Length: 461
View 1 (spheres, rainbow, N blue to C red):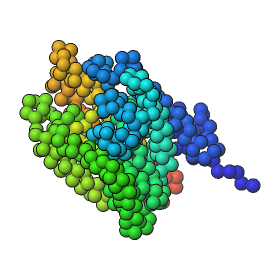
View 2 (tube, one colour):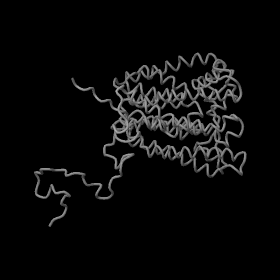
View 3 (cartoon, rainbow, N blue to C red):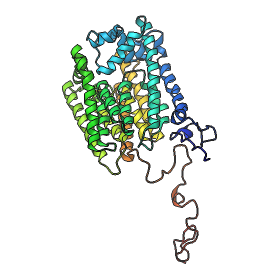
View 4 (tube, rainbow, N blue to C red):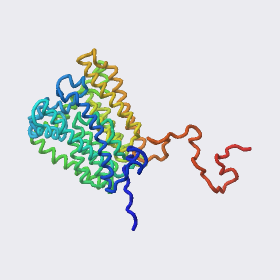
Protein backbone atom coordinates (compact mmCIF):
# COMPACT_ATOMS: atom_id res chain seq x y z
CA UNK A 1 0.00 0.00 0.00
CA UNK A 2 1.35 3.42 -0.92
CA UNK A 3 2.26 5.75 1.88
CA UNK A 4 -0.01 8.72 2.49
CA UNK A 5 1.31 11.93 0.89
CA UNK A 6 3.12 14.25 3.24
CA UNK A 7 1.06 17.43 3.88
CA UNK A 8 2.55 20.66 2.56
CA UNK A 9 3.09 23.40 5.11
CA UNK A 10 2.19 26.98 4.23
CA UNK A 11 4.91 29.01 2.47
CA UNK A 12 7.32 30.64 4.91
CA UNK A 13 6.11 28.63 7.91
CA UNK A 14 9.17 26.44 8.40
CA UNK A 15 11.67 29.23 7.81
CA UNK A 16 9.84 31.66 10.10
CA UNK A 17 9.62 29.10 12.90
CA UNK A 18 13.23 28.09 12.79
CA UNK A 19 14.92 26.30 9.91
CA UNK A 20 14.33 23.43 7.51
CA UNK A 21 11.20 21.34 7.85
CA UNK A 22 11.59 18.39 10.17
CA UNK A 23 14.30 19.87 12.38
CA UNK A 24 12.10 21.64 14.94
CA UNK A 25 8.59 21.48 13.47
CA UNK A 26 6.97 18.23 12.45
CA UNK A 27 4.35 18.50 9.69
CA UNK A 28 0.84 17.82 10.88
CA UNK A 29 -1.29 15.13 9.30
CA UNK A 30 -4.53 17.01 9.93
CA UNK A 31 -4.68 19.00 6.72
CA UNK A 32 -4.10 22.71 6.04
CA UNK A 33 -6.04 23.94 9.08
CA UNK A 34 -3.90 21.88 11.45
CA UNK A 35 -0.76 23.06 9.66
CA UNK A 36 -1.87 26.68 10.08
CA UNK A 37 -2.58 26.32 13.80
CA UNK A 38 0.97 27.35 14.85
CA UNK A 39 0.70 30.42 12.64
CA UNK A 40 -2.60 31.41 14.23
CA UNK A 41 -0.92 31.19 17.64
CA UNK A 42 1.66 33.70 16.47
CA UNK A 43 -1.11 36.33 16.52
CA UNK A 44 -0.68 36.44 20.29
CA UNK A 45 2.48 38.54 19.82
CA UNK A 46 0.99 41.56 17.98
CA UNK A 47 -2.25 41.35 20.01
CA UNK A 48 -0.34 41.36 23.29
CA UNK A 49 1.71 44.33 22.09
CA UNK A 50 -1.46 46.18 21.10
CA UNK A 51 -2.90 45.58 24.57
CA UNK A 52 0.29 46.80 26.23
CA UNK A 53 -0.03 50.03 24.25
CA UNK A 54 -3.46 50.52 25.84
CA UNK A 55 -2.18 49.87 29.38
CA UNK A 56 -1.68 53.58 30.06
CA UNK A 57 -5.42 54.24 29.58
CA UNK A 58 -6.87 51.24 31.40
CA UNK A 59 -6.71 52.98 34.75
CA UNK A 60 -7.78 56.53 33.93
CA UNK A 61 -9.85 56.03 30.78
CA UNK A 62 -9.60 57.35 27.24
CA UNK A 63 -10.99 60.86 27.68
CA UNK A 64 -9.15 64.16 27.74
CA UNK A 65 -5.56 64.92 26.81
CA UNK A 66 -3.90 62.30 29.00
CA UNK A 67 -4.30 59.43 26.47
CA UNK A 68 -2.49 61.53 23.85
CA UNK A 69 0.70 62.13 25.78
CA UNK A 70 0.59 58.56 27.10
CA UNK A 71 0.17 57.45 23.47
CA UNK A 72 -2.71 55.10 24.27
CA UNK A 73 -5.51 57.14 22.68
CA UNK A 74 -7.99 55.02 20.74
CA UNK A 75 -10.68 56.75 18.63
CA UNK A 76 -12.68 53.52 18.72
CA UNK A 77 -12.86 53.35 22.53
CA UNK A 78 -13.28 57.11 22.86
CA UNK A 79 -16.42 56.94 20.70
CA UNK A 80 -18.38 55.18 23.48
CA UNK A 81 -18.99 58.24 25.69
CA UNK A 82 -18.57 60.75 22.86
CA UNK A 83 -21.34 59.23 20.71
CA UNK A 84 -23.29 57.58 23.55
CA UNK A 85 -22.79 54.18 21.92
CA UNK A 86 -23.79 52.41 25.10
CA UNK A 87 -27.41 52.75 23.94
CA UNK A 88 -26.76 49.88 21.55
CA UNK A 89 -27.50 48.77 18.01
CA UNK A 90 -31.17 49.75 17.91
CA UNK A 91 -30.37 53.36 18.82
CA UNK A 92 -27.71 53.48 16.11
CA UNK A 93 -29.96 52.12 13.35
CA UNK A 94 -32.78 54.52 14.19
CA UNK A 95 -30.49 57.56 14.16
CA UNK A 96 -30.59 58.25 17.89
CA UNK A 97 -26.83 57.53 17.98
CA UNK A 98 -24.72 59.01 15.21
CA UNK A 99 -21.31 57.88 13.96
CA UNK A 100 -19.26 59.22 11.09
CA UNK A 101 -18.35 55.78 9.78
CA UNK A 102 -19.91 53.37 7.25
CA UNK A 103 -23.12 51.64 8.25
CA UNK A 104 -21.92 48.08 8.78
CA UNK A 105 -18.80 49.08 10.71
CA UNK A 106 -20.87 51.38 12.87
CA UNK A 107 -23.40 48.63 13.49
CA UNK A 108 -20.72 46.24 14.75
CA UNK A 109 -19.28 48.94 17.02
CA UNK A 110 -22.72 49.84 18.39
CA UNK A 111 -23.56 46.17 18.97
CA UNK A 112 -20.44 45.54 21.07
CA UNK A 113 -20.91 48.82 22.93
CA UNK A 114 -24.46 47.80 23.81
CA UNK A 115 -23.17 44.49 25.21
CA UNK A 116 -20.54 46.20 27.42
CA UNK A 117 -21.91 46.54 30.99
CA UNK A 118 -21.42 49.44 33.34
CA UNK A 119 -20.68 53.02 32.46
CA UNK A 120 -17.77 55.41 32.01
CA UNK A 121 -14.32 53.86 32.21
CA UNK A 122 -15.73 50.47 33.25
CA UNK A 123 -17.82 50.29 30.11
CA UNK A 124 -14.83 51.29 28.01
CA UNK A 125 -12.77 48.47 29.50
CA UNK A 126 -15.50 45.91 28.83
CA UNK A 127 -15.88 47.19 25.30
CA UNK A 128 -12.13 46.88 24.74
CA UNK A 129 -12.22 43.30 26.05
CA UNK A 130 -15.07 42.39 23.70
CA UNK A 131 -13.30 44.03 20.80
CA UNK A 132 -10.09 42.10 21.52
CA UNK A 133 -12.03 38.82 21.37
CA UNK A 134 -13.62 39.81 18.06
CA UNK A 135 -10.27 40.93 16.67
CA UNK A 136 -8.61 37.64 17.64
CA UNK A 137 -11.31 35.61 15.90
CA UNK A 138 -11.26 37.75 12.76
CA UNK A 139 -7.47 37.75 12.49
CA UNK A 140 -7.40 33.96 12.92
CA UNK A 141 -9.83 33.70 10.04
CA UNK A 142 -7.67 36.02 7.92
CA UNK A 143 -4.57 33.91 8.60
CA UNK A 144 -6.44 30.80 7.45
CA UNK A 145 -7.69 32.67 4.38
CA UNK A 146 -4.17 33.77 3.42
CA UNK A 147 -2.81 30.26 4.05
CA UNK A 148 -5.46 28.52 1.94
CA UNK A 149 -5.94 31.06 -0.88
CA UNK A 150 -5.51 29.80 -4.44
CA UNK A 151 -3.60 31.28 -7.39
CA UNK A 152 -1.36 33.32 -5.07
CA UNK A 153 1.91 31.35 -5.13
CA UNK A 154 3.78 33.74 -2.81
CA UNK A 155 1.07 34.12 -0.16
CA UNK A 156 2.60 33.97 3.32
CA UNK A 157 0.29 33.70 6.36
CA UNK A 158 3.24 34.30 8.70
CA UNK A 159 3.62 37.78 7.24
CA UNK A 160 0.09 38.53 8.42
CA UNK A 161 0.33 36.86 11.82
CA UNK A 162 3.61 38.57 12.76
CA UNK A 163 3.08 41.94 11.10
CA UNK A 164 4.13 44.72 13.52
CA UNK A 165 1.53 46.98 11.92
CA UNK A 166 -1.22 44.94 13.57
CA UNK A 167 0.01 46.05 16.98
CA UNK A 168 -0.33 49.68 15.86
CA UNK A 169 -3.82 49.46 14.37
CA UNK A 170 -6.19 46.70 15.50
CA UNK A 171 -7.43 48.40 18.70
CA UNK A 172 -7.79 51.91 17.29
CA UNK A 173 -10.69 51.63 14.83
CA UNK A 174 -13.26 49.35 13.24
CA UNK A 175 -11.40 49.15 9.90
CA UNK A 176 -10.91 45.43 10.49
CA UNK A 177 -14.63 44.84 9.75
CA UNK A 178 -14.61 45.91 6.06
CA UNK A 179 -11.14 44.47 5.64
CA UNK A 180 -12.32 41.03 6.74
CA UNK A 181 -15.16 41.07 4.21
CA UNK A 182 -12.78 42.28 1.48
CA UNK A 183 -10.32 39.43 2.12
CA UNK A 184 -13.19 36.95 2.23
CA UNK A 185 -14.26 38.27 -1.18
CA UNK A 186 -10.81 37.62 -2.58
CA UNK A 187 -10.54 34.16 -0.99
CA UNK A 188 -13.95 33.06 -2.28
CA UNK A 189 -13.13 34.40 -5.74
CA UNK A 190 -9.94 32.34 -5.97
CA UNK A 191 -11.91 29.25 -4.91
CA UNK A 192 -14.52 29.89 -7.64
CA UNK A 193 -17.25 30.49 -5.05
CA UNK A 194 -18.83 33.34 -6.93
CA UNK A 195 -21.97 33.76 -4.86
CA UNK A 196 -20.03 33.89 -1.60
CA UNK A 197 -17.60 36.38 -3.12
CA UNK A 198 -20.51 38.58 -4.22
CA UNK A 199 -22.22 38.51 -0.83
CA UNK A 200 -18.95 39.30 0.96
CA UNK A 201 -18.19 42.04 -1.55
CA UNK A 202 -21.58 43.69 -1.03
CA UNK A 203 -21.18 43.66 2.74
CA UNK A 204 -17.64 44.99 2.39
CA UNK A 205 -18.93 47.99 0.43
CA UNK A 206 -21.36 48.83 3.25
CA UNK A 207 -18.58 48.48 5.82
CA UNK A 208 -15.94 50.57 4.02
CA UNK A 209 -15.66 52.12 0.53
CA UNK A 210 -12.00 51.07 0.13
CA UNK A 211 -13.35 47.55 -0.45
CA UNK A 212 -14.48 48.70 -3.90
CA UNK A 213 -10.87 48.43 -5.11
CA UNK A 214 -10.74 44.76 -4.11
CA UNK A 215 -14.01 44.09 -5.92
CA UNK A 216 -12.69 45.90 -9.00
CA UNK A 217 -9.47 43.85 -8.98
CA UNK A 218 -11.48 40.63 -8.77
CA UNK A 219 -13.72 41.66 -11.66
CA UNK A 220 -10.74 42.54 -13.86
CA UNK A 221 -8.88 39.32 -13.03
CA UNK A 222 -11.75 36.85 -13.33
CA UNK A 223 -11.92 33.24 -12.28
CA UNK A 224 -12.61 30.59 -14.96
CA UNK A 225 -15.95 31.33 -16.60
CA UNK A 226 -15.32 34.65 -18.32
CA UNK A 227 -17.74 37.56 -18.35
CA UNK A 228 -20.68 35.51 -17.09
CA UNK A 229 -18.86 34.89 -13.81
CA UNK A 230 -17.98 38.58 -13.47
CA UNK A 231 -21.59 39.58 -14.05
CA UNK A 232 -22.69 37.10 -11.40
CA UNK A 233 -20.13 38.51 -8.95
CA UNK A 234 -21.10 42.15 -9.45
CA UNK A 235 -24.81 41.35 -9.54
CA UNK A 236 -24.67 39.43 -6.28
CA UNK A 237 -22.65 42.22 -4.64
CA UNK A 238 -25.16 44.85 -5.78
CA UNK A 239 -28.16 42.84 -4.60
CA UNK A 240 -26.54 42.18 -1.22
CA UNK A 241 -25.65 45.83 -0.71
CA UNK A 242 -29.17 46.96 -1.63
CA UNK A 243 -30.81 44.29 0.54
CA UNK A 244 -29.01 45.69 3.58
CA UNK A 245 -28.93 49.38 2.65
CA UNK A 246 -32.65 49.80 1.88
CA UNK A 247 -33.94 48.73 5.34
CA UNK A 248 -31.25 50.86 7.00
CA UNK A 249 -32.24 53.86 4.87
CA UNK A 250 -35.91 53.37 5.78
CA UNK A 251 -34.99 53.58 9.47
CA UNK A 252 -32.58 56.51 9.07
CA UNK A 253 -31.08 57.56 5.76
CA UNK A 254 -28.45 59.58 7.63
CA UNK A 255 -26.82 56.35 8.80
CA UNK A 256 -25.77 55.76 5.18
CA UNK A 257 -25.13 59.34 4.09
CA UNK A 258 -23.50 60.81 7.20
CA UNK A 259 -20.03 59.21 6.76
CA UNK A 260 -19.65 60.51 3.21
CA UNK A 261 -20.84 63.99 4.17
CA UNK A 262 -18.24 64.04 6.94
CA UNK A 263 -15.59 62.79 4.48
CA UNK A 264 -16.29 65.58 1.98
CA UNK A 265 -16.37 68.37 4.55
CA UNK A 266 -13.62 67.39 6.96
CA UNK A 267 -10.68 68.85 5.05
CA UNK A 268 -7.10 67.66 5.24
CA UNK A 269 -6.28 65.56 8.29
CA UNK A 270 -3.15 63.97 9.79
CA UNK A 271 -1.33 61.46 7.61
CA UNK A 272 -2.54 62.94 4.35
CA UNK A 273 -0.11 64.63 1.94
CA UNK A 274 -2.52 67.57 1.82
CA UNK A 275 -2.00 68.05 5.57
CA UNK A 276 1.52 69.24 4.77
CA UNK A 277 -0.01 72.50 3.57
CA UNK A 278 -1.78 72.85 6.92
CA UNK A 279 1.53 72.33 8.72
CA UNK A 280 3.03 75.06 6.55
CA UNK A 281 0.25 77.47 7.49
CA UNK A 282 -1.49 77.29 4.10
CA UNK A 283 -4.46 74.94 4.63
CA UNK A 284 -6.34 73.66 1.60
CA UNK A 285 -10.09 74.22 1.57
CA UNK A 286 -12.19 71.15 2.46
CA UNK A 287 -13.99 71.23 -0.88
CA UNK A 288 -10.71 71.22 -2.78
CA UNK A 289 -9.39 68.36 -0.66
CA UNK A 290 -12.50 66.33 -1.44
CA UNK A 291 -12.05 66.93 -5.18
CA UNK A 292 -8.39 65.90 -5.03
CA UNK A 293 -9.29 62.79 -3.05
CA UNK A 294 -11.94 61.96 -5.67
CA UNK A 295 -9.27 62.20 -8.35
CA UNK A 296 -7.20 59.85 -6.20
CA UNK A 297 -9.98 57.28 -6.51
CA UNK A 298 -9.89 57.69 -10.28
CA UNK A 299 -6.12 57.24 -10.26
CA UNK A 300 -6.41 54.13 -8.09
CA UNK A 301 -8.99 52.56 -10.42
CA UNK A 302 -6.82 53.38 -13.44
CA UNK A 303 -3.78 51.74 -11.83
CA UNK A 304 -5.80 48.59 -11.10
CA UNK A 305 -6.98 48.46 -14.72
CA UNK A 306 -3.47 48.95 -16.14
CA UNK A 307 -1.92 46.36 -13.84
CA UNK A 308 -4.64 43.81 -14.58
CA UNK A 309 -3.81 43.99 -18.31
CA UNK A 310 -0.14 43.12 -17.86
CA UNK A 311 1.26 39.82 -19.06
CA UNK A 312 1.77 37.60 -17.22
CA UNK A 313 -1.37 38.59 -15.39
CA UNK A 314 -0.79 39.50 -11.72
CA UNK A 315 -2.62 37.91 -8.83
CA UNK A 316 -5.78 39.62 -7.59
CA UNK A 317 -4.15 40.75 -4.34
CA UNK A 318 -1.38 42.61 -6.20
CA UNK A 319 -3.87 44.72 -8.14
CA UNK A 320 -5.91 45.28 -4.97
CA UNK A 321 -2.83 46.36 -3.00
CA UNK A 322 -1.85 48.93 -5.63
CA UNK A 323 -5.37 50.38 -5.70
CA UNK A 324 -5.77 50.45 -1.92
CA UNK A 325 -2.38 52.13 -1.45
CA UNK A 326 -3.23 54.81 -4.03
CA UNK A 327 -6.53 55.61 -2.32
CA UNK A 328 -4.97 55.80 1.14
CA UNK A 329 -2.10 57.99 -0.02
CA UNK A 330 -4.45 60.53 -1.65
CA UNK A 331 -7.21 60.47 1.00
CA UNK A 332 -8.18 63.60 2.97
CA UNK A 333 -6.89 61.84 6.08
CA UNK A 334 -4.58 58.84 6.51
CA UNK A 335 -4.55 58.10 10.27
CA UNK A 336 -2.28 55.37 11.67
CA UNK A 337 -5.08 52.82 12.00
CA UNK A 338 -5.89 52.96 8.26
CA UNK A 339 -2.59 51.17 7.55
CA UNK A 340 -4.26 47.88 8.54
CA UNK A 341 -5.74 47.83 5.02
CA UNK A 342 -2.30 47.11 3.59
CA UNK A 343 -1.35 44.21 5.90
CA UNK A 344 -3.27 41.22 4.45
CA UNK A 345 -2.52 42.18 0.87
CA UNK A 346 1.19 42.43 1.66
CA UNK A 347 0.92 38.86 2.96
CA UNK A 348 -1.06 37.66 -0.06
CA UNK A 349 1.37 39.22 -2.53
CA UNK A 350 4.39 37.91 -0.63
CA UNK A 351 6.25 41.20 -0.26
CA UNK A 352 9.75 40.56 1.06
CA UNK A 353 10.19 40.70 4.80
CA UNK A 354 12.81 43.42 4.61
CA UNK A 355 10.39 45.70 2.71
CA UNK A 356 7.59 44.74 5.10
CA UNK A 357 9.67 45.62 8.16
CA UNK A 358 10.91 48.91 6.69
CA UNK A 359 7.30 49.91 6.04
CA UNK A 360 6.31 48.81 9.57
CA UNK A 361 9.12 50.95 11.01
CA UNK A 362 7.87 53.97 9.05
CA UNK A 363 4.36 53.35 10.40
CA UNK A 364 5.65 53.18 13.97
CA UNK A 365 7.67 56.38 13.59
CA UNK A 366 4.66 58.19 12.13
CA UNK A 367 2.34 56.97 14.89
CA UNK A 368 4.71 58.21 17.62
CA UNK A 369 5.30 61.48 15.77
CA UNK A 370 1.56 62.07 15.42
CA UNK A 371 1.02 61.79 19.17
CA UNK A 372 3.91 64.19 19.68
CA UNK A 373 2.40 66.61 17.18
CA UNK A 374 -1.00 66.48 18.86
CA UNK A 375 0.67 67.11 22.22
CA UNK A 376 2.39 70.18 20.78
CA UNK A 377 -0.99 71.72 19.95
CA UNK A 378 -1.79 71.97 23.67
CA UNK A 379 1.74 72.09 25.11
CA UNK A 380 4.27 73.38 22.55
CA UNK A 381 7.16 73.09 24.99
CA UNK A 382 6.78 69.29 25.27
CA UNK A 383 5.36 68.32 21.88
CA UNK A 384 6.90 67.64 18.50
CA UNK A 385 7.39 70.60 16.14
CA UNK A 386 5.42 70.59 12.90
CA UNK A 387 8.53 70.18 10.79
CA UNK A 388 9.51 66.90 12.40
CA UNK A 389 6.01 65.51 12.06
CA UNK A 390 6.02 66.53 8.39
CA UNK A 391 9.22 64.52 7.91
CA UNK A 392 7.67 61.44 9.54
CA UNK A 393 4.55 61.85 7.39
CA UNK A 394 6.55 61.99 4.16
CA UNK A 395 8.68 58.99 5.12
CA UNK A 396 5.54 56.98 5.83
CA UNK A 397 3.99 57.88 2.47
CA UNK A 398 7.21 56.88 0.71
CA UNK A 399 7.21 53.54 2.55
CA UNK A 400 3.60 52.79 1.57
CA UNK A 401 4.38 53.74 -2.01
CA UNK A 402 7.42 51.46 -1.98
CA UNK A 403 5.34 48.48 -0.83
CA UNK A 404 2.82 49.18 -3.60
CA UNK A 405 5.69 49.43 -6.07
CA UNK A 406 6.93 45.99 -5.02
CA UNK A 407 3.47 44.57 -5.70
CA UNK A 408 3.42 46.32 -9.08
CA UNK A 409 6.80 44.92 -10.10
CA UNK A 410 6.32 41.34 -8.92
CA UNK A 411 2.59 41.00 -9.48
CA UNK A 412 2.59 38.47 -6.66
CA UNK A 413 4.08 35.89 -9.03
CA UNK A 414 7.22 33.77 -8.44
CA UNK A 415 10.43 35.41 -9.55
CA UNK A 416 11.55 34.54 -13.07
CA UNK A 417 15.17 34.88 -11.93
CA UNK A 418 16.27 33.53 -8.52
CA UNK A 419 16.83 36.22 -5.93
CA UNK A 420 20.43 37.05 -4.99
CA UNK A 421 19.66 36.01 -1.40
CA UNK A 422 16.66 34.80 0.52
CA UNK A 423 15.18 36.45 3.60
CA UNK A 424 16.98 34.12 6.03
CA UNK A 425 19.70 32.76 3.74
CA UNK A 426 23.38 33.55 3.29
CA UNK A 427 24.20 36.35 0.84
CA UNK A 428 25.62 35.42 -2.53
CA UNK A 429 29.26 35.96 -3.34
CA UNK A 430 30.08 39.39 -4.68
CA UNK A 431 31.46 40.25 -8.09
CA UNK A 432 32.39 37.66 -10.71
CA UNK A 433 32.13 34.74 -8.29
CA UNK A 434 28.39 35.31 -8.01
CA UNK A 435 28.00 34.67 -11.74
CA UNK A 436 29.91 31.38 -11.84
CA UNK A 437 27.90 28.16 -11.55
CA UNK A 438 28.17 26.29 -8.26
CA UNK A 439 29.02 22.99 -9.98
CA UNK A 440 30.47 21.87 -13.30
CA UNK A 441 27.69 22.54 -15.83
CA UNK A 442 28.83 20.02 -18.50
CA UNK A 443 30.15 16.49 -17.95
CA UNK A 444 30.62 15.32 -21.52
CA UNK A 445 30.74 18.25 -23.84
CA UNK A 446 30.41 17.63 -27.58
CA UNK A 447 31.97 21.02 -28.30
CA UNK A 448 35.56 21.92 -29.14
CA UNK A 449 38.40 21.38 -26.73
CA UNK A 450 38.38 23.83 -23.89
CA UNK A 451 34.66 24.59 -24.10
CA UNK A 452 33.89 22.44 -21.05
CA UNK A 453 36.74 23.73 -18.92
CA UNK A 454 35.86 24.92 -15.43
CA UNK A 455 36.32 27.79 -14.88
CA UNK A 456 35.61 28.45 -18.55
CA UNK A 457 38.48 29.36 -20.83
CA UNK A 458 37.94 32.94 -21.99
CA UNK A 459 41.36 33.82 -23.45
CA UNK A 460 43.63 32.34 -26.13
CA UNK A 461 47.13 30.99 -25.53
